[in-house]
Length: 99
Image (cartoon, rainbow, N blue to C red):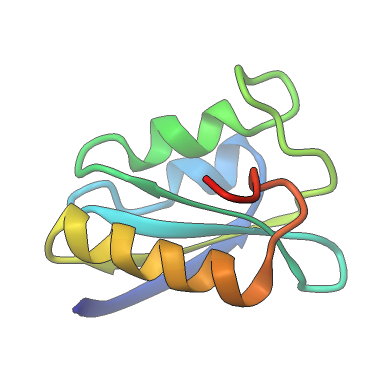
């Protein structure tokens, strides 16, 4: 169950540093048109680090991202369940299908 806190920031290092890091989160990376191009989850304390890994010079870059949107959850299991539903419904182009 979401804790109700969502936030959208620019998908760059300055924006990522403004993301809350105190709860597990489902995150979406959005393109210029506002379409979800990647969905993932991150554990409490690792949300900023995980998003930074998707920046252009990161370990797992996601090209075309301009906004990052997070939705905090009480438990990582809740975020993971929602991730499955979001990926199945919206089929983001950078998510590995069938994962």
